[in-house]
Image (tube, rainbow, N blue to C red; front, side, top):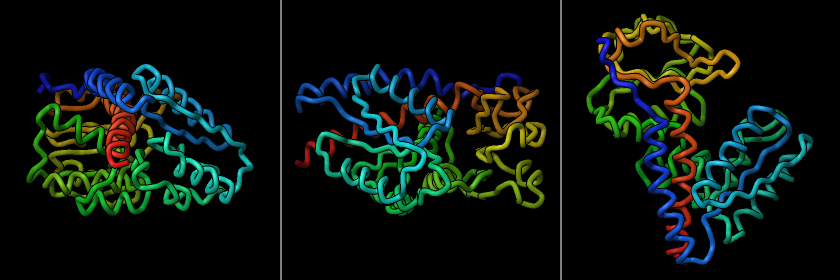
Length: 284
């Protein structure tokens, strides 16, 4: 199994970026303004600041404008809701991103839900999630949708496969399970407290690791010939949620860490933003 396929999110994102840049240029010429993403970050969390800076850089390189609202740690839920509403009403803004996680005193889900559905390009609102689950129109959560695009690009058919999603977060595990189910996979959602997790891992044909714990899973638990998507990344340890030692001899395909899921997340956010402008401007 040493000829396992590397699911190269970095190269796919670079290819997709070329198409996004072309589309952004067409929209800019047609509507006399570039696609625009409003990013809101609360407080001084270093990882959040790094992620937003990466998104800003990627947007700028593709002809997408970013407006970053960096508000103080002590900002209240009410103040944040007012800021989100102002962005909802601004017709020059196509997408709104509230960087996760917000400080503990913020009602994060209430703020997510305040983002207008047609501007929820990060796919974080309750209505957007519900629409996605039901197969209705909505922007899909960026990391799960990026993973599905990656699997599709490498022609990995999910239909009829037993898929295990390890993680149940609102922005990754739960929507990931829903998208796999909509792709006709048979889905089990597990988490760090699941009993006999190693048995589930050894049975699964597709495993998505999204538990957020460094090297939580040994790749030796994986079924021979299965597909592994490691959606975790822990910069301090330079690893994901899976201990990759010997992975090439076990799976048929896997995402590297880094360079697998991460680039597809940012790419999908920008793709959603450009598509939001195309749809919203065309309807005005």
